[in-house]
Amino acid sequence: MSDSHFDQLETREPIARERALFNLLPGLLARAVSLAPGWAEHLKGIDLATINSRAALASLPLLKKSALKDLQAKRPPFGGFATDTAGVMGRIMMSPGPIFEPEGRGEDWWRSARALFAAGVRRGDIVHNTFAYHLTPGGWILDAGARALGCAVIAAGPGNTEQQLEAIAHLKPNIYVGVPDYLKILLDKAKETGKDASSIKRALVSGGALFPSLRAEYKARGVAMAQCYATADLGIIAYESTGPEGILDGMIVDEGAIVEIVRPGTGDPVPPGEVGEMVVTTFNRDYPMLRLATGDLSAVLPGVSPCGRTNMRIRGWLGRADQTTKVKGMFVHPEQIAELTKRHPELGRVRLVVGRDGEQDTMTFKAETTAPSDALSGAVAASLQALTKLKGIVVLTAPGTLPNDGKIIADERTYA
Image (cartoon, rainbow, N blue to C red):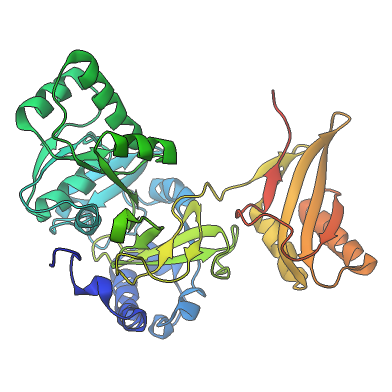
């Protein structure tokens, strides 16, 4: 561990990282199917020894996060995706849904120490952790990483603002951990009541949007902000790191994860820079996640971080991928639109726009193509009706005219 980087893994050549991760992947897959019946069923009939590249990984079926609740109900407690019984785990959590998650007994099990280090947290710091410790894993995820770095942790949790300010004034933590907005509540209340919260100089936030205006306000108040992206099923997925002159540019993928960006409704990777759904594989021996479709949108950023870390960078959280909507009483799913694009490979970026006209729902299917024609328009319209059981207008446009925001279904109806 240097003053700049958590370990040497962060600065290795990208080709060396890819080789190392995909050399390990077949072993992870073999362990998962041999010890976890859910994975054995999900990956049945696949020669897992051949899954040793990104292209091969993309051939595996997705596990949708939205499906975990039903899978766990059928095979409690973890859907058959843990490699050991619940009784040997260190903790058992419950997220909204409910979805149940295990925590194993290893140090920094959620891999948060790396993100904290990138945010400037060091041994001997005192971390004021306002993520919840009750049932949900947020508090434990950051708590474990901070203690692994050699920090003391104030297990504050959310709420009880006056009591928290008493603790801050007395214990003088220099690090805040929690959702972006709550630190402002603490600082504003401290100013109002005359409590001393000036010890807090750095923060690592997650679980909500850190708007540029709020980041600027914290900077003006002397607090350096960084954010990370994590989920209860996967732990830390990506994190911000400050480069020379305080530059922050995207989020760096954690060394213990493989991130793919795929077209919503499919498992097909999109070109670099294209917005799509984040699909994550983690090297966790207790609770391996293999191509978990998070439902969150992001995009790959080119190049390496100004801070010198060489792993893939993503743009951070860009919205939700689940765009299912109801038109004339019928559900239209992203998977149906994805199937349409497979039937017509001459199409590029596409978007189904749902609107209203004369108190009636309407559908307009917009598609980029280099070879527009009446014949193609008619064929696409026929496929749209066959797949959705609904008629729609087809508009063919030039490449680069549709927004790069990951949306393939845009509901533009006004419900006010």
